[in-house]
Length: 281
Image (cartoon, rainbow, N blue to C red):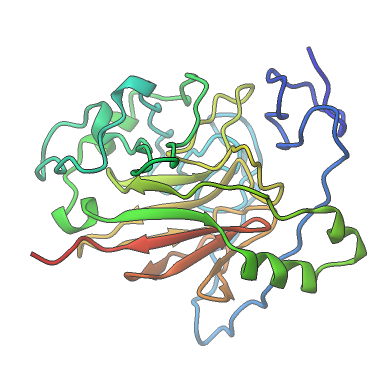
């Protein structure tokens, strides 16, 4: 099995599926968070971290979701399996009505970007771990407004510059990508995981930021978008290595932060996820 520069055994031969480093390249440099944590008055206190082992993979708990496999400690359910590549719905297709049974298109899969030169997220065909306990949650109705939202992923130069400015001298080794196509994901289901797929861990997030180009600051399970009862979405960081920034402020691990149309969720060294509400009719 190939070994990446950081010493990980990888099932992939182009990029390490543990740390995301290009095989044969230089070891990745950790990316520190570019913003300070907001005051306690602005954000509620984070829940107590117990360190209990995840029943799915045994990883110590650091928040509401397992950092490795995505298990939800709050609901006691494992992540839904990712659908096959052929089952990805067209971004222009209407969303399923509330209460419809969850099929491949309703499981939260990422859809291909629209327009020439804007391919959808890559996938290697592997499925995320699942359990029978996840079925009731996946079939639960989603408010129509929540299902009409979308997330646009871009590489943002200004955010990258702010990260480098706040980092140490080794941050200069992290280069802004010369080309990174815009990707658009329709938000469906109850949750949309943001991160990088891992073949060895059987993890394939719905918003897959694996690349290329691969942002070295993005964790395999970096953040989770959660559908709210009022038809909007919220974001939660389950304990990523480098934190999650919403509109310039780092959010507290394990605390759900409401999102609005146009809000920017920054992860890694240059990746920005912009939320877009459904168009008014």
